[in-house]
Image (cartoon, rainbow, N blue to C red; front, side, top):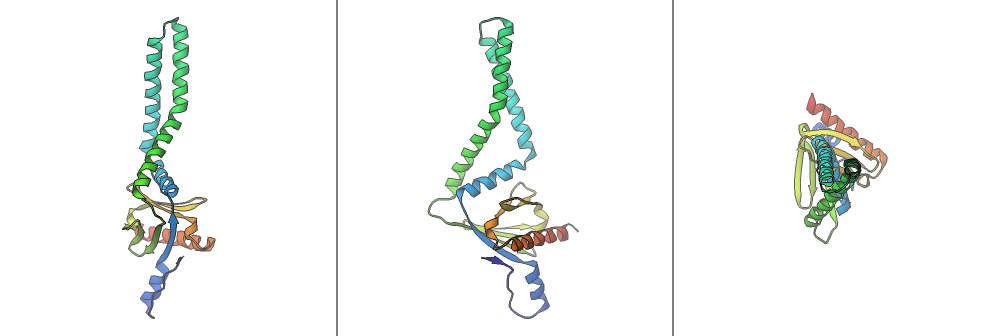
Amino acid sequence: MSGFLSYSGRGALNARLATLCMYVKFDFTEDDLVDASKRFLGRQTNNHSSDWKNSLLSALAIGVLVFVLLRSDAVVRLFISLAVAGIIILVYPQVQRSGVESRLRRIAKELMPPPGPYTCEIEIRPAGLWLRQMNKQTIHEWPSLEAVEETADSVDLFTRDGGGVIVRNRAFASDEERSRFIALIKSHLIQSRS
């Protein structure tokens, strides 16, 4: 179910509210929750620099350890140590991503005990973006929203505190409805910043 909210009555205020508000909902899965968490983590810039530093430090530490433990010519030890360090630099990001994904999946399983389905409801309101999922309601006031990003499978709304809302395309009955949703969000954001 989605669309503009219908306000009863004939007043100008009700007509104005109907143009400022919109409601959508969709069912989501554990995979959706993990994907959303990865998107939120991906926006944290200190996360990427920390991964790079950890990769280099691990490569350096293991490279030095290999150099010290090997019993051969210094040039051979240096070559093998550099090769091991290079492999670690190449493999570390994948191992790190895999570890993060498995931790996110474990958390998602804890948050989403069976049986489903799990429904996410989103309403654009004059005061902010209202969200209800898993028996919790949240309102992200307009000044707390930082960015709106359109992706192939969703509309991503990011907050200044690193969270946000991923609105899957299946929440919209049509491309036109998705476009209205995005335009309405952007309109509220512009108004909140002026």
